[in-house]
Length: 126
Image (tube, rainbow, N blue to C red; front, top):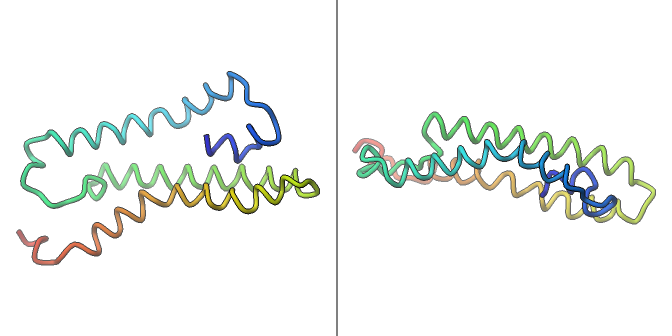
């Protein structure tokens, strides 16, 4: 939804059925991969006695990289829409709420970095 808002959908233009399909094609593989990683972290026997966060595994860092790429796509679309709506009242909406929505993409990377940085070093040795 945030990617559609960054293109002006649902605010400047009406959302059509093709937009939902476009959003699913873009975000579907990412969301399924995140769900699979979470299930693996929850149910795999190898993860029973570890204190590591599933997103600090190699596959988790790859998903974080994809999340940052999606942030880049969002910012690019938001910038293009903001420039198109610059003379309109909607520019205020995009300038304020666009940044708030964009911060959501940083939740996963920040959580992973905090899980790696805040975790006590003695736990790493175990």
